[in-house]
Length: 470
Image 1 (tube, rainbow, N blue to C red):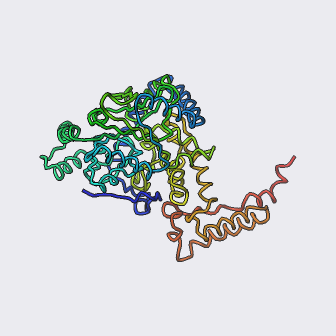
Image 2 (cartoon, rainbow, N blue to C red; image 1 turned 45 degrees about the horizontal axis):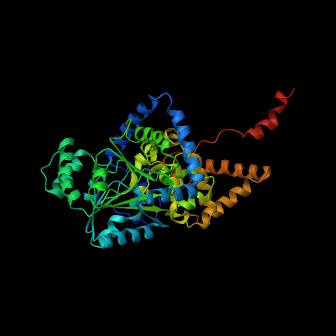
Image 3 (cartoon, one colour; image 1 turned 90 degrees about the vertical axis):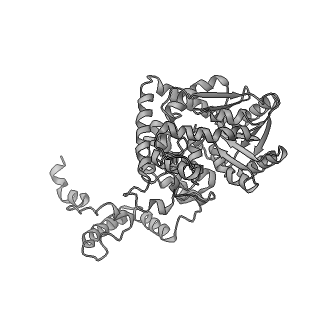
């Protein structure tokens, strides 16, 4: 089984995965499953006559929540602390990991069960715990599969979307010494058997949080497999890691998102389980780590802060033609696809992730399916502008020179005319040059240079305008 590990400090659009986008490098199972999921999800959302009104309402709720983030976070902390939870604040992944290790040492934790959490992927938590001799086991089936394979998730909702049932059967045979099978129910039963003992033995459970309700101090976790409920309720210690953007003002806002998220993520009307956690159960401990990790950087840019509205449904990823060609690992960090292309540069900085906004065809499908109406295409264009204007190693001196020359040529009618004359002559002569047509890099890799038509319009009009003037 091929393993894939990428360094978490950078997020370039990885060249080894994207050197020829005209030839798919993602596994066939990824594109097929993404297409099937996209079609199914759209059928479900299109069947709801007021789905667009839901989208608009959710956009307004998230807009208010992000605009009042400071007040709502303090309100959430106050209300959940009043019921016995311990709230910890973390400015970045390193501080969040320090909190996690301190909790683990305090409670003598040697084994951890984890439900799905993209924030803990940002923290690289499993490896951090492993370095302390603590075994962290993913309990979501897709996360469990990629953990066994030594890989990282390729999608935020379906982490093992790139693997077929045959791939999983071979993996379970190799890693778990189970008889080979491709039957879905049998594979699920194998995973359930191996995970059941881990829940009972773990001293700590770790989860993410889909929504944090400010007014009631409620952490909401939704799931389909029951693993999140077992991970949060069975061990004596539960740690919920919450990105600060997950805040919602009121409990009355929650049904709207419970309707939107599963329909956009998995094509369901409602997930199988919805857990509302108001505080620790008697005799147990609950810690809530509120983590920034670059999110306040997103807040600073009014034109880009709507990226924080994301509810992690993955709909934009399923529909993205670039993602289907190259897969999730090409994006170099935790979040792939369109949402990764607008979120990662802001969380990690343009120096590390400035190429990601260019990993898009700007087809607009992502905006069409986003349940909270994030205008991803315009955000991509805005971040491209930032990427080429902010200090960044992605801009070489040759690129700067080319764009400076282009700006000069477009700066006046005479310069423009001279430039276009040069282009027309150059294109006509290029067919006779030894480097044509394959030496112009990406530009001619998938296209031919256009044939130059007859006289340009300016010259044609100069000699013909008398025929058309009154």
